[in-house]
Structure formats: structure tokens, C-alpha cells
Image (cartoon, rainbow, N blue to C red; front, side, top):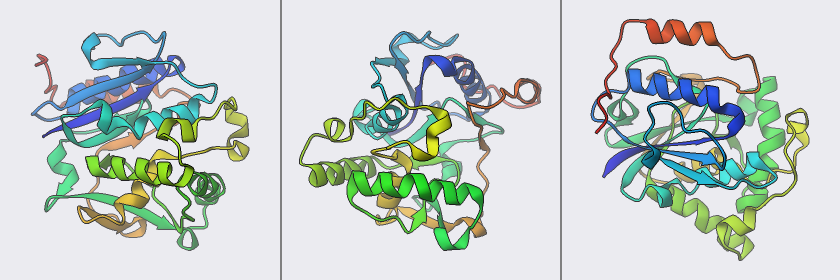
Length: 256
């Protein structure tokens, strides 16, 4: 199967998405992966992006949780792809990259941080928010944070297993079991009643499967040139324009 890249975005993040795609176009090595954009209904299509690569969805009132739930169905939306790289609009490629860079001996890497090994504000916030969300979704008490680095890339059967766990716990179809209509407000992030976290659940399941390499975040090895920003913060226009103007391949055009 061919590798896939799945990007979930919304109207507010259009500028971020445009630059995410520009960095992807510049730095991803051949062969070109299958790309699918899952956009909220009413979003504009980014420049030079074929409409056939866009899927339009109606978000829930809780758009944040809806985005995470949709990403956990990426395998269903990209049936010919394995593995699948999940990207947010504010994730940027910062150097030449390909699927080969993310696979070692036929396995994908999953980094983790045990709660007791990192007492930073970031980790404490993650524990406060995502431990209850994962417990609500799949009935597991996380003893580690699996959302500590990029890339977030998984085999198809990992997505399938996460959905099985949700449906078994709730006795309902996946989307119905996790639906949330509590509007998300960024200023209330730490207290929002999340029902799910895609990368925490996917990372947990991946840690139990054979085709992954588990790596303690304190002993990180290979660095993948991906950088996660924060779309609620200042847009780093100068940094990104300098990055795009730098010497390096623009490898994906013309489009297949």
C-alpha cells in the first residue's frame, strides 16, 4: 500500500493549512504520498490543492473533539494507505523528509513520557486533560503521555483497534459514543470535558502492538524535520517564509 497523509483543518486555520501544504510540497521526497484534507464545511480550498483531495465535514459544537475523532477514522477515509501520517494545520515540515525516514526495520516509532519522569508544566497539563479523556474513551488509565513529539504516524490496524476499544466500552458506534456538543473555548482548555484524544489512544494501542518501536522521550534518537506550532498563538510568518525560501527540493510538483 501507499503511504497517506491525513490533515484535519477548519476555517480559522486556513493560513496555517496553506503553509503546512507549502512546506509539504517543498520538503517531501518522492514518491508522492496520497494526501487527504478533511475540512470543515465552508472552508476554502487551499491554493493548488486539487478538490479531489478534500473532504468536507460538518463539525460538532465541540469542534476540537470532532477533529480528534475524525482523525481516528483516517484509515476508513484513506482505504488504500498504510501507514497514515496525521497532521494538524499548524505542523510544518522543516527539512527533506519521506516515509523511509519514519520507518526503522519495518517499524514505526512511538515516543512516550511517563508522568513521573517529567514534572514540566506541559506534562502536568497533559496529564490533567488527557488521562480523564482516555479513561472516558477506552477505559484505560494512562501511565504515560504518548503525545510528546512528531510525527504521529500509525499503521491501519492501530486505528481499527482504537475504534474497537471505544465501541466495546460504550456499546455504541464510534462517532456516536464520543460525540460532544459542549462548545470548546481555548481559555477553558484545562477544564473542557474531552471525551477522546486521538494521539493518546493511538499511541497507547501502538505501544501494545509489534510493528512499533517504543522510545523514551529522554533518549530520543532520529530527529524527523517536523515542527508543531500552536495555531492559537502568533503566526510565524517570517520564519516560514525564510524556510520556504531556503535551498532545498520542491519535489512533489507536477502533481500526479
